[in-house]
Image 1 (cartoon, each protein chain N blue to C red):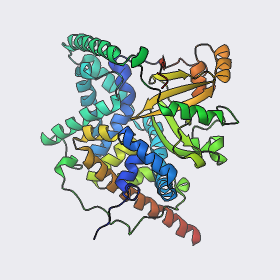
Image 2 (image 1 turned 120 degrees about the vertical axis):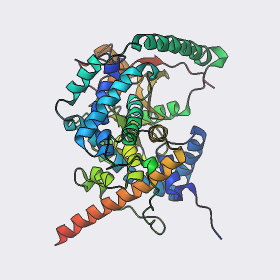
Image 3 (image 1 turned 45 degrees about the horizontal axis):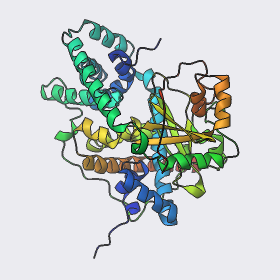
Image 4 (image 1 turned 90 degrees about the vertical axis):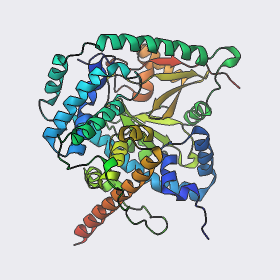
Length: 182
Length: 269
């Protein structure tokens, strides 16, 4: 039976799988991700009066989760396997192609999970914007709020991150082609 | 000497345009350029192919998420929520409800169309109706043939329509489609059959011969037009769910309608 969409449970609990996946992408450890999800929902329940009905509950939960992750990291409860990206230095972006990169690859033929693997391999400062946009489907503004970065930074990190993803996918497709040719 | 790049040659700007992450007036200017200039259109289509690959992957990934949650986590969280002290919750909720009421009243005073102050009809409503009028097949959805992917939507598979973008959340997924010869037109939408719970408000405009629905996903509004004759047939068949069939055909028959239907009264200018 579905829950009343206006209650905390009805509004927020459907996003538990999304929160767990986001927490796992931050901590890279399932038990830490589970603790983070539980703390997120407890904090969200206390703060539910501040949630504006009709806005994106997932983005709201992610914002809470992200802040808790930073707090937990600063208090030493988490190991620094994935540093909050506001504490990371900017990394050099992948080298841009000369001119426009032709996109004539058969994107439809990518193996299942190829994009997810490519996103996971993107360096941290660029990974989260790509993940939040392309996997979680959030807007640039929501991503900026969750990561506490200006929208211009969201756009530039998203672009660089997508370039990593594109290159990884190109490698996968070309690898599959050469395997097939042998 | 450096030459200033056109926005379509700047990948950041290209993505902003294709993803609708621009003020509406700027977006309209760029869409007009896409329609008018072949090289701009080609760049957009090439990039869109990559972006739609990412979106479809995201859609599939979100669909699988529930199966990836560790067993027992939801029960653990529910138990923690039940036992957590929350003494001020009721008071906060009452305060918020009062605030929301004030905001709603304020919004209704300023935004409700009335007489000469009514809001002008968005041009997309007319475009959607025009696109649907020119469709010989009438409304069809990608769930007609058992698939939730817009890539399998018959007019897309046949090449009559192409996918502009695909957005989605747990409420379902909307693919915005376009005719190749009329790139910026927003006239068709196909909605995947999965997703339920509660949905966003759906606007409904009666143009006499056509009914145009509008719905906001992310920061974009999508329009779908169906003939009034067809809509009235659906109303006779399922009086409380006729609006659902416009997007979902009959794939959601028997389920509760999660949407609030808002009848639009635009000012005709």
